[in-house]
Image (cartoon, rainbow, N blue to C red; front, top):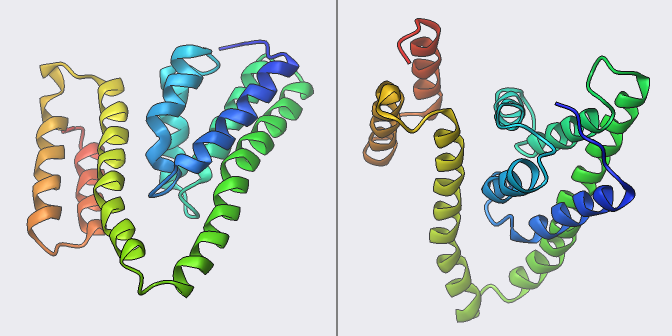
Length: 198
């Protein structure tokens, strides 16, 4: 996939991630639905498969959860440069996309988190601070469900994918009702995928 980005497009990429950074309650992964809307649906800077692959690769790699934003920015830049095999300029555009997306997603939230956590720690006994913390829990859960929905629907929402839906429902119930460690469930899912059952 190849796209051409103007200076205004690069600025739009940066400002989009700057705004998403302030909405990333529960981590950057909770803003995936809006990233998909902007990068894939609205601007068509990425394809569905590129979007999903960037998230899957970053989540499988060791390191911080936010790495998928760097991969999304990298892929947008590569597409702007004509693709991976186009030229050395594509690598430069990839680095620019990665830099802008990571700067955008990290700068506002880091600054706000630092200031807010200092204030909340100093005022931790206030009723409003405790209420805010309790009220944010359902918001984070809803954002994570929306992220899961976007990633799942892109893989196929028809009944032909019923093993994936059954596996998702089973794992959800196991996590909710048991104390089973998530790594066991991830390993079981990897084994089922390797065997070709899902």
